[in-house]
Image 1: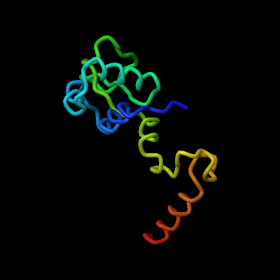
Image 2: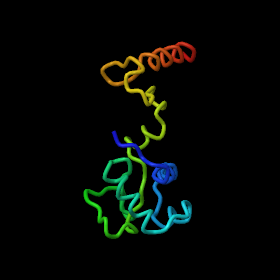
Image 3: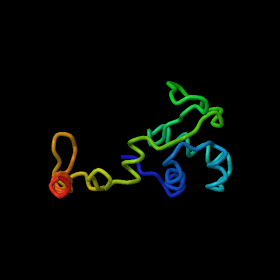
Image 4: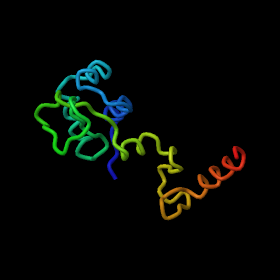
Length: 118
């Protein structure tokens, strides 16, 4: 499994919402070429999605002109940055999961919440 380094994690932490390349340059204070390489790496490993600045959908992206896009976390990137959000943790076998991948502990919490609310 791919493990992002410290700089890649710094970029990932800024991508909860779609961000333009220029705003990432300002927020991370990284040189343009370093940030570009990091984004390409994160795109390759599908931790980040490139979204055209004009529309919300795209099939392809141009890796030579990264300024044409906004970048946001993919589902895989979000799960990596927030492993406990869906009852997962870094140890894949640490919790028993049902067929949908939801931990039995998380299901029990959801049921107790539903009983308390309804």
